[in-house]
Length: 163
Image (cartoon, rainbow, N blue to C red; front, side, top):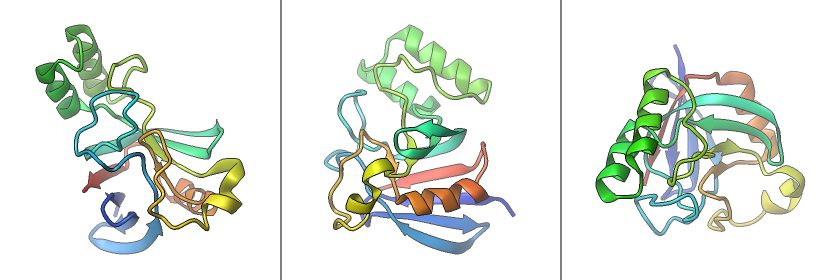
């Protein structure tokens, strides 16, 4: 059975499932949790929706990075309707969605959203109360936890982010 992740912004949790079975729960922090809608690359809001891991990277400052296909087709449609995305940006997102690739970097909604470790400051941050949201909109877990997730997840793993 394939793995999937459920990210619960409200309760600062990331849950790893195998099918319908909860395998493990991790403490997580996010970007700003004051909004249900991400409106720009600079708002630091963790988006809500259904995503997939589109790339796994180890050469990042936050230890390891599981990039999500944000903005997805739903975010793009909403962004176009609300005027956050241009028609060209919308078309680019829709194309990458169709091709099952990571979203282009240059959209107004941003795109470098994913699940990552803490990096150099792991020893400090992992002991803070998990209501301290400091990311750019991504989901952060301890370096040890991202190492664990990196071993069991793969490109294409579904990630559901809820509030």
